[in-house]
Amino acid sequence: MKNLFLFIFFNVSIFFKAQQIYSLRPSEIDLPENSYQKDTNNELPYYEGIWKGTWNNKIIYVTLKKLSNKYDNNFKHYKDYLIGKFKVLDNNGNILFDNTSLTDDNAKINGVSFRKYGDKYSLIYVDPDLCNTSGGIAINFTDSSKTQLNWKLTLGSNMITTDCQYYNTTPFPQALPKEIVLTKQ
View 1 (tube, rainbow, N blue to C red):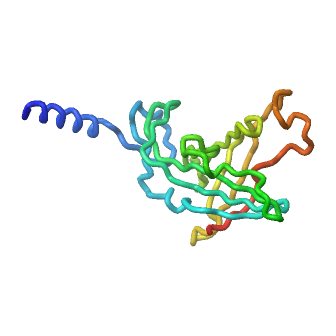
View 2: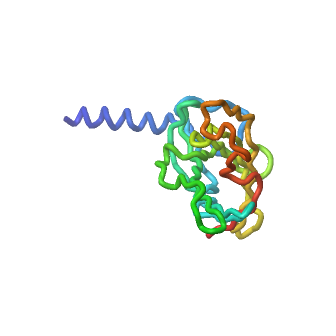
View 3: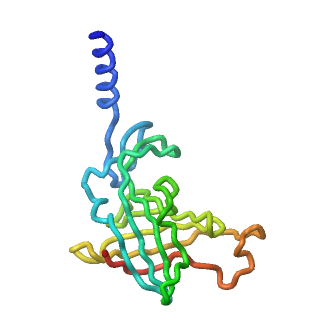
């Protein structure tokens, strides 16, 4: 029994010792498999919370949450990142879009990393409910108190096919603003 305990302890300690930790800030190297891209500067918690903004007679609430040490199947390493869920209301309080009840694994907004230059954090938006509309989002704080967040969405070249429920809808539904300043609630 003692030998089994020592064997398990030895293997676990090798695993934790062998896992290399890297910052979320970009580096020029490809991260090795099973490494950990960690929020070593503890920057992501400042983004967490509910953010509110108004655009085109709509009110948006974006909830950002930090996930830690999650495995990324595409890049084969662990990382810390933000996810985002949102709710959009019209001026009368009617809900236009709401994905706040989705599980974290199904969030439509997923963080990538900090950009190489400046303090912008990059996220990816993919919305299967809106004909797979997708794009990139860059966020950064506009004030030192970190209560104002600049948001910029750049939509990808989304092809809308005839099987899309919004194929002939004009204008096409816009769930997220292209540019807005959000205020922390």
